[in-house]
Length: 151
Image (cartoon, rainbow, N blue to C red; front, side):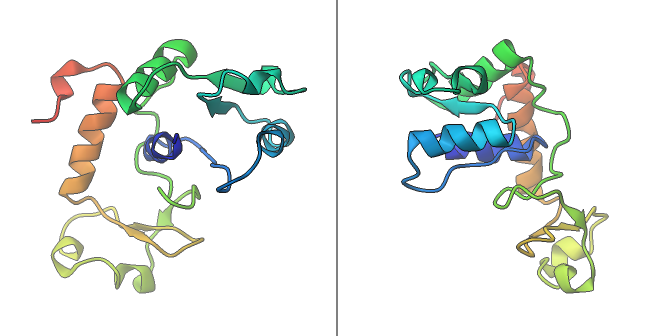
């Protein structure tokens, strides 16, 4: 349920891992502890698992906008920290796109100024199209800038 939030955290430049489908709570907590991560959840019982308390943040909201506001308020999370620097799928830091990666970028976008980036893990290509401008506006809204409202 919070996979969409993880994707937006990546869009903001944060290292945001997700659990495997069907992974049990104990395994999620063990991973959070081992990797020194903060486990975001909506499950109020999860922090009661041994070792989970210091690695768990229960989100009370019901949708992405609520969760973004909670993270901004409770963690002072900067939604514009390092936008578009991580793969939205793999969570790996993007690198400059080489010739092979650029081949996956549409011709019209390749004619633009860039930057052109790629995921070294999955090979996905990233470029600053109109979708990026819409995403940046949403990140600004998450950061508490209402003037960035989407039309």
